Length: 215
Length: 215
Image 1 (cartoon, one colour):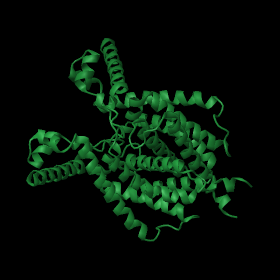
Image 2 (tube, rainbow over the protein chains, first blue to last red):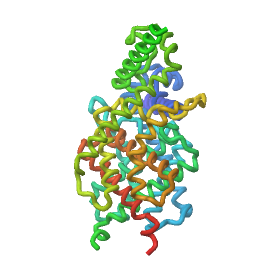
Image 3 (cartoon, rainbow over the protein chains, first blue to last red):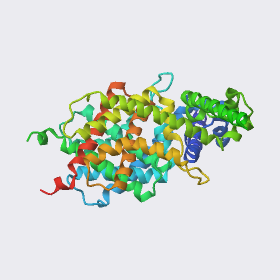
Image 4 (cartoon, chains in turn blue, orange):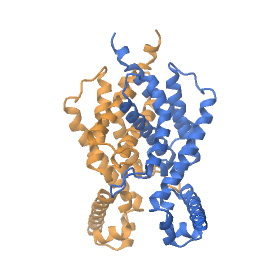
């Protein structure tokens, strides 16, 4: 039995590695059962002995991308702020997170896109695996922290939701910019726009704090 | 010669109509020469007698989408604001524009995506037709107006650029939301998030005005 388990584990690892290369190269479009099987040196049907479907492989690769992004951000956070933070430290944190996302997406374009191109809900209504939801939540936690500092009056659910919205907005600017769709900008100009966007957003949240509204 | 010109005009119109149906149904992926020719009742080669390439057809359809969006926004702008504008009228205008974009994208999903999925620069470096650039600029003008009201200190080029960045950000939230990618939200929650995002962004721009900084 151990031999069988070992073989399963090896096959899983080989398929994840093949899926990782495919997504790094061509994004989600690179995920094709026949080619993955060829790369992992197994029959096409064998894939489905170790994974329920190809989606499961995509979740594995996307989880690796999330981990890479977290490592990337951790490096940025220990380095000093690039620009003098005009106001709260939380504003500066959000700006640094956004530019880190830009840098990460520029260096890992196809990987980064796969993170967002994968549907949240499967067409058959099947839920996303809990372990992946937890990985994703940890990434959004990076945004939730400074957001909570900016707006301690916001409830947990509101913070959770708005962190995802902010991320989606930054993702839109970064990816339309990187793809030269709508925005065809030199890298430093794109970086400047991301900074302007997130700084204005954070400053606005600060200006909208209930304490500050009452004059 | 008139008969030839008439036939060319008819063929162009038939191809644009076919491309419009294809994009409305399946986005850019729906644009296939063979199927367009079949729908327009011509040979595949005949397409290239009246259009330089399929990109030219996409620009025609996208220009229609831009016109539809402008008509849609015009209706919204004459109606009274949905929520009491907290502060400047320009903030309210930007929020209404963003929610109009959400509503338009929800009702015209595939069309709307095609507007953003089409590359700004062709791979061969060939420029986008000037007439299309002008149409696009008119749409961004809708954002530039209130942005200029908010920040009269910003230069023309800065306003032009940041209007596109704001649009890209809203596009990111709207489309990740509508596609149930990253954000799988009920429509009214998505609308609330778009409003929060744009209001904070606009309030931040207002708070960052140089006059206000000097205390």
